[in-house]
Length: 255
Image (cartoon, rainbow, N blue to C red):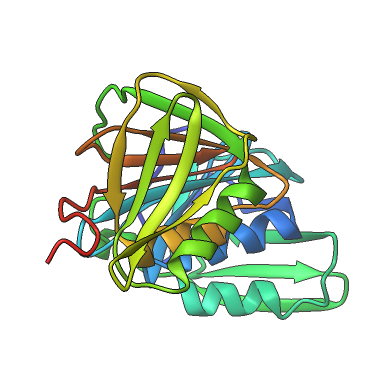
């Protein structure tokens, strides 16, 4: 099929209909993750997945999701854009079916979300109104940590709850700590020996609110990979989701 085409006064495709089936849990987790950082986003219908890449308005965080898909029609590479509130409402109002069907029709300006007897219509947004959503250039990260996402989620939640100070990630002799300062004292939650570390010992701080939202977006059943270094961005990656968070150069409670 041809390259992706822009929206004009309605979707333009070479075939009358594009119909894709996706897993409900994967779809709701992906849309929930995107909606924490932006109000609208593009959806690219690729051969094996629906993909989206976002950058927040402050350029503090970038991220992307990949939602596995099966097509009920011939595949056509199409990119659309949707408002998060409208798309998320259409997705979550279904009575928790295992799968949902997303349908695009040539010349129309809406996406149909359906399952069983339920159907909703999500207006398409002109995707040229969105800022460039290209993935950021990234450095060679000095240290890589792999751990159960459930443990990382618990660690971030454990330290971010009592404080709005930046969160410090550090590695020492294959041990990983997640920490912040509370009333002048370090409050630490380690990964309890569940992590593997590849690279030198490093420490870096990141914004508590962004890191909390990232951790909340991850599936607890996944394995998470963290790549970072002193004054480096933090890359958080699971099988179908990734984020890159800018470093916070102010040490926690350094004022």
